[in-house]
Image 1 (cartoon, helix red, strand yellow):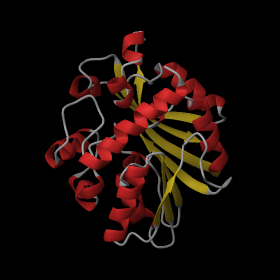
Image 2 (tube, helix red, strand yellow; image 1 turned 90 degrees about the horizontal axis):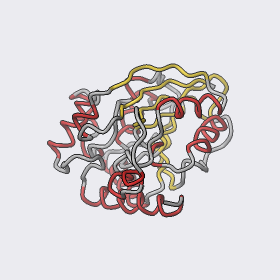
Image 3 (cartoon, helix red, strand yellow; image 1 turned 90 degrees about the vertical axis):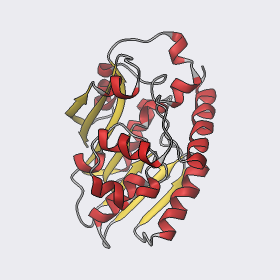
Length: 248
């Protein structure tokens, strides 16, 4: 499947998720209780879920907020921010002197996130429509970047990490959770639209993924590898949730 078709499939799927408040993984979820259960299983606390429950769509494969060293006054960038769940959690950490910027390519997600931000008076959070392969962000302007189960959805992953490297300040870090493969998968799986949108079809092999991050110039530290997520959410497909800290 070509890159343009992949983007259309992903955008259509996540527009639907935004409208229906459902998750995008390969499980059967979509209610608040389902979304809450999924979030707990990937590392979110009850307190975090309660802070931004409206924005919790049951997406993600980890908790980059818990992994990341986010400080008061930081400027934080969320790649593929969805309805803003991680952005709103980060906003509590950066405080009034900091700023959180969420970038997402799906207008429906941006609209939903902006609506939640306005409703709950999140004055230090901004959402921008854009692709993470071409970030609408200035060079050397970000202290911490985060991403939660999004980069696997993008056809050109090398370009994503080059862009992240560009916008981070020297010494800045990205904390990410993403789905990576432990074994190769069939072409049928790679071209299955549901599995593409469900974070499987476009996933890379683990070592290839890590190599791309290093090639972009980052120092890479593996924080955790969750293999059990395969049984919990992905019907035993040979994959894991990889949690990484990468420093510029």
